Image 1: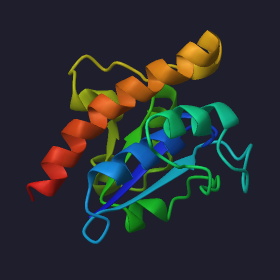
Image 2: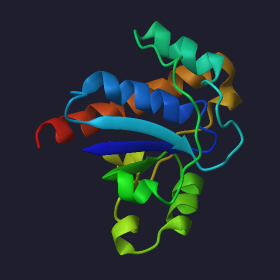
Image 3: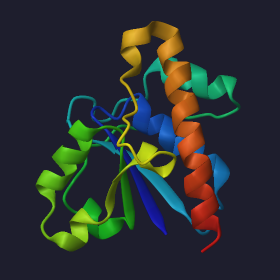
Length: 150
């Protein structure tokens, strides 16, 4: 099983999601990666605030490197989680067929059916990164439980 976490820049939300889910699943059975729909930060490490929040929760995401989402990701991954509706729409816009479309999900739909979005953490300073971590962590609990049961 291969899972891709996607946000806009791949420096704050999706690296956290990648790190959190990796900590909850068996790496020999489930591969987790992250990407951004924008090409703004290719080759960069995650935002220092994401690294800090992850570290405070016992996770090290500092070695991750930003990359841009590619159409080939539809072939490489079994499920693709978008952090918000804008990312979701950007990914769906690249889909080649219905098989690609059904792979894409909003991550918070794992814990709520109301199409909630993971907010951009930059609007709430340090607290925003912790709140984002908590939301993603809860969603990843659900994702991990489902994936591990397969």
